[in-house]
Image (cartoon, rainbow, N blue to C red; front, side, top):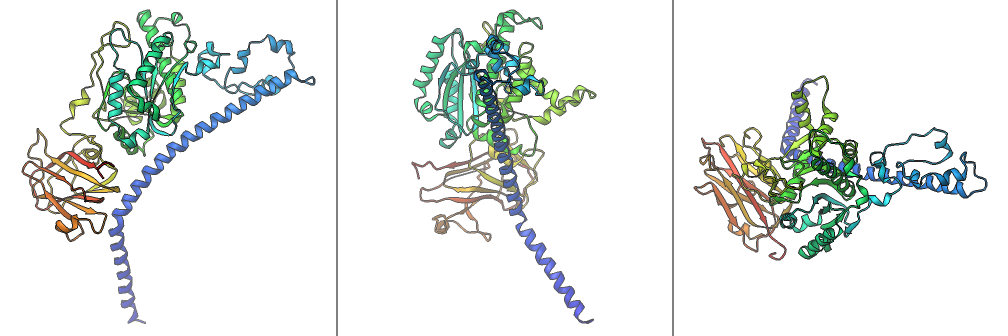
Length: 549
């Protein structure tokens, strides 16, 4: 028995070492899987939250219809037990039926046992009895639902110029074929008192973007003039002129209308203006940015630093946002109201303003550089010249933005601050790392594998020219066992194939032949240590189009 103990110990130690070895071997794959799983779970949660909101609203609508039916049934039934006489009901205003989503006209309600929830009629009482005012008066639409991102563009008639067509061109041209199927652009013509202008804009959009309208990518709506109260009765505040007060009040209502209209059409909603320029690849960058916030309880994602431009919301949260706007639509401008909404949600009244600002930054996440630039000079407020420019739109353009295929990225390099390789890949910022050592790497795992036309990595930057790759190569792993790359390129011990070396400028740029198939992995491999840090200012994995393939 004494002789058996050392052997048992050796066997136990061997099993432990084997376990540790296999755990270390597959830990990387586990981390990859965990990351993908977290992103997918967060995306699914947003979809379920939106579906749950819609289901609750449909249930409310059914309850409302049921209660209205009960009311009419009691009116015509000879055995009605309603406390009020039929003449009382007939003399009452028909709008009583619409005073709230759950305005029950039943015996239970009359006895005072039910609560009446506030609704849009609470804040806009002039709509009571006129539910048709909540529908667009002009509606050019293919009724597209299920988009990932819905983009809302309010537009008005300016005196001398219209920016709408150029804005739409910028947005449409920045979308790939797949992105067009996943996006919805809603043009909201906020001219309810000018039907001729509304019709002319609708015709112009149809003429200029026939394919996009027909496919459902672009739709055009305009509200009924009955949606708006008498704007001449709005009290003047903050020393603003009557014209400015009317303009900002109407703008609050404009934004509320389009948000309520768009909230059922997609998972996320982004507000723009009709005079902006979009950065190429903006759609995928926004989707990736949302995925990066999967662990945060965010309220607002900002893709621009100017006003309401580029503000992204979860569609399921839009009713709360709109209700807050409607509470104070007569009192303050829309950007103030949004800031107050965030303050109410996260700020502690016992803390100072610095603490409040820090808390708001936790739920108001800013993307840099800006994806949208304000280009209009003539404001929607008559007579006002608007010269605002987003200084973050071009400030960081020392790196170049491309739409790269979905991938996971890993690196052994020590990242400097927040300049991660993931941000460089999606075009959010540069990648910056401390001095690379021999065998350091950057690995791009393409999910799914794709066919590429070109591969470009540009290291260095105008103000840090020496921070580039030296003695570094570009390597790939083809998906197909018989891919022609395997016949021409040198194979490494771990299964990669060398394609090219970084040149003296710190650039590697490879154009792949047409017979090269799908690639599953791409790697940057350092062969000799360097004293300089390294910057990647551009990554472009150009996918082959269907026509080319």
